[in-house]
Amino acid sequence: MKKDSDIVVVGAGLFGLTTALELALQGYRNVTVLDRHVPPVPDGSSVDISRVIRFDYADDIYLKLAYEAYLEWYQSPKYKGVFFPTPVVMTSNSNPVGKAYIQKSNDAMDRASLPWESFKSSEAARRTYPTLSGPLASPGFLGYHNKQAGWADARKAIAGLRDECIIQGVSFVSGRAGTVIGFDRDGASGTIRAARTLAGTEVAADLFVLAAGAWAGSLVPMYNSTLATGQVLAFIRLSPEEMVKYERLPIYVNFSTGFFNFPPHQDTSMLKVVVHGWGYERAPTEAERRLLKSDVSTPPLAASNGRKNYIPADGERRLRDGLRELLPELADRPFEQAAVCWYTDTPTGDFIMDYHPDYRNLFIAGGGSGHAFKFLPVLGKYTTLALHKDLEPALAQKWRFRTEYKDVASAFPGDGSRGGPERRQLLAEERAKL
Ligand SMILES: Cc1cc2nc3c(=O)[nH]c(=O)nc-3n(C[C@H](O)[C@H](O)[C@H](O)COP(=O)(O)OP(=O)(O)OC[C@H]3O[C@@H](n4cnc5c(N)ncnc54)[C@H](O)[C@@H]3O)c2cc1C
Ligand SMILES: *[C@@H]1O[C@H](CO)[C@@H](O)[C@H](O)[C@H]1NC(C)=O
Ligand SMILES: *[C@@H]1O[C@H](CO)[C@@H](O)[C@H](O)[C@H]1NC(C)=O
Ligand SMILES: *[C@@H]1O[C@H](CO)[C@@H](O)[C@H](O)[C@H]1NC(C)=O
Image 1: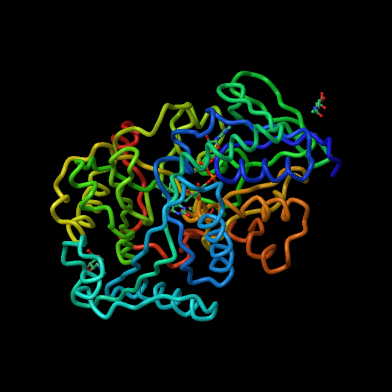
Image 2 (image 1 turned 180 degrees about the horizontal axis):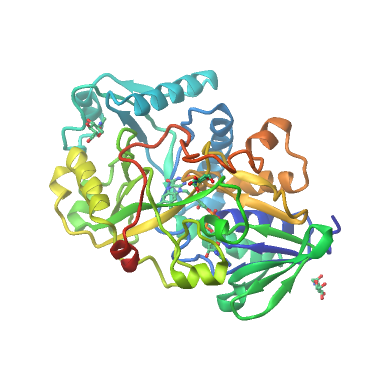
């Protein structure tokens, strides 16, 4: 590919910005990023106050890459004030799925000679982390902690990437002229000529990178290999005294339910809680269906100034149940804000970095499956290796565009890290509130 090739990246989230930046650093002079909104995109999946950075994985490849990324987060001056070292406590009860994930993760850590410390009981966990005032689990507690972990301020990390892109000469188009509603195919050649936007413009390019996250599946056929699932999160406002009291709160993950928490966020005085679960599907509205000619689950397309302050009642219950096990004194506190954030799930939980089978010049970067953010410091290296078809075979195999799920019903078992009740469709009255 020539360095003055026109490259259009659709989506200014984690995948789009890391890819655009790496391409610019490699000398590509004509990279343009399109998005519904100026990054950090307030309702994008890469943005809000925090993301967990851990390298505890059941899978050897992700473990290795996450460790590579962790060292960057931890050591690079770039992430000062963005990354905050914090231990993670990974737990489960006797639920076989959560248990298996923890055991496999410990095995993978051992294979990589990385340290972790087991907790014999929930009392032992509470002795190490006395701010965990709740019962945690009993009986059947299984857990360990890893002090080499932390969290990143997601909005700041994305703003930093955006600024690096601008310095390296990447162009940005936002708003209606940056909102892609479809692609124009160039007849027989099997390529895409231009992206069509909501403003009625056409953006031509030699190469298109589709990094539109949970929205991407509405723009091109994904052969049933991605699914947009809504996940619930909430923010609790802490008093100045509570900010001190909870300062040393670890990140505590219960893989049986998917519930996890962050320590207090200094800039906003918020304590954030999330459920990493099977999530909700959202059918498109009539208008979205007409515009995008797609019927798959999708987040709302209209540009917005942030996520709606709403979560379904069962989601709220799960967040409060999680709090009750950990910090019962906060379990009934009103949420300052609650919201649905969108995962792009894939059948195996693997990312996608590959060319689309129907279009030779359409590269797909995404399929974050709820765990991609931690790879931010190294992700662009891998997406651009894939773009140049230079990935080592094991990685190329892992991140290939999978067509084999085309006719497979319920093709989304995931990577074994999800807990809680089955995925369901949002009801009409729930959709109306999002
Ligand atoms: C609640 C939540 C918690 C998470 N927690 C963690 C965590 O703790 N640790 C971790 O490692 N990972 C975590 N993740 C996963 C991680 O954040 C995601 O995998 C990653 O951010 C996805 O990046 P993306 O670039 O694919 O998507 P996005 O950031 O959503 O980017 C896609 C962009 O495309 C734009 N777009 C969409 N449609 C169009 C269109 N038609 N035209 C133009 N632009 C368009 C959108 O506006 C958006 O900005 C979490 C995700 C969520 C939702
Ligand atoms: C980018 O491509 C367009 C269209 O081919 C061209 O007009 C423009 O000069 C290019 N810009 C750079 C910086 O190469
Ligand atoms: C995880 O949540 C489940 C369901 O509430 C609970 O039974 C279990 O004890 C919790 N485990 C831990 C370790 O917190
Ligand atoms: C996958 O495809 C099958 C068969 O076409 C369909 O029944 C199923 O609902 C699809 N699954 C998803 C999650 O889209």
